[in-house]
Amino acid sequence: MESLYMPREVTVMDNGLIETEQLMQAIKAKDTNRVQALLERQPQLASARDAQGNSPILLARYYGAHDIIGLLLARGVPLSVHEAAAVGQSAALLSLLGESPELADSFSHDGYTPLGLAAFFGHADIAAELLQRGADVHAASRNEMRVTPLHSAAAGRHAAIAHALLEHGADANARQQSGWTPLHSAVHNRHAELAALLLAHGADAHAANDAGATPLSMARELGDAQLERLLARPNDQAGGH
Image 1 (tube, rainbow, N blue to C red):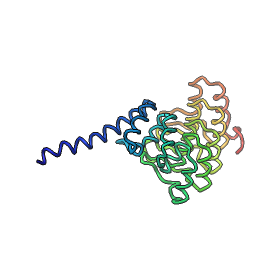
Image 2: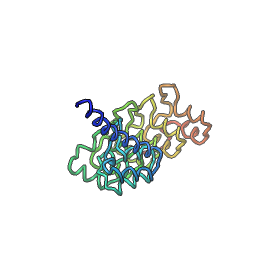
Image 3: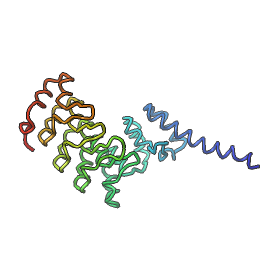
């Protein structure tokens, strides 16, 4: 008899895994109608996790599926502090921090702090709330990227958040994976305003990454004359804090 029942149990489990995978694939494809249909049939999928530990709303944020984020929020899906930071839900974040202040410096399943997520996705209000509560501006992500919140702000092209982080003591010359500094990212993104801000806070235009490229050499390679002129100035000429 055991052999007759086992396949059914496995099938039930497999169906759950299959529907979770279907939901995640629909999110990656930004197929809002498919996501809605799956959630209407199986509402509990809104709180599912994929094999990497991603929730539907966090995966939607990572894939830029804004309509799906709105759909999930409208369904009242409960948020973790990291999800709230990533999708810009300040009320949920503040409620969670009110209950557990230590969450401000906690790490997500994939290694990011709430401040790092808010910085990358451009939620200045949430970044400000976290900084006000003493969130660690130096915390490097616990994954192979090793990014600080300032790296994340630079990668996301968010100068205002980068400024707030620098004013709270963030290291303008911190190194991430491959030896990149925030200034490398600013140059890579051809973001002159952000590059000027970093230089004003002591960023080194001659800091070589693991491949030997400096922000200045990257600007030259890009053929960006504005950035090259900016970076060619001595750091003490770049401006004041």
